[in-house]
Image (tube, rainbow, N blue to C red; front, top):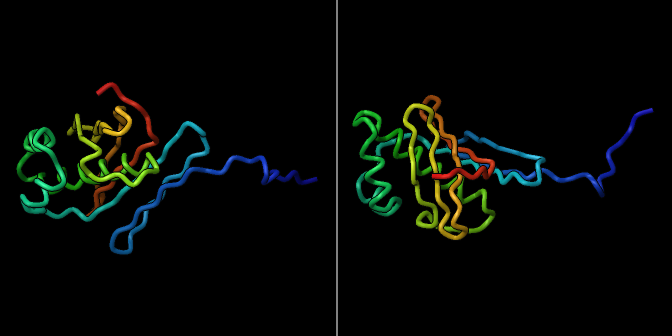
Length: 143
């Protein structure tokens, strides 16, 4: 006998999806406490006008700690981290509603504070080929 899951009582997964130039990524979680958020972007050095729109002065100071030859990579990772954190809320927030508070250049972990909730989330970032991506399950961190 094959047992079937009752679709009326089974929890639905929380899902986050992102795409860029025909590349798609997705993150799903069954844990009711998880809040998945994911983003992907092509790594390209954006000009200072992008930075002044996307990041506040404290974020720019953190970004300035990145090695010069890796600025495009970390610029993109920070942007993706903010987007992933925002997506994890399920709310339509702007980039100024998510503030990068910490960057670990060795592991790719980034702390992102959400202005609306006052919590700071741990966001993991990585790069593969020409793309950087970031993801979170809404895990809180102290900084």
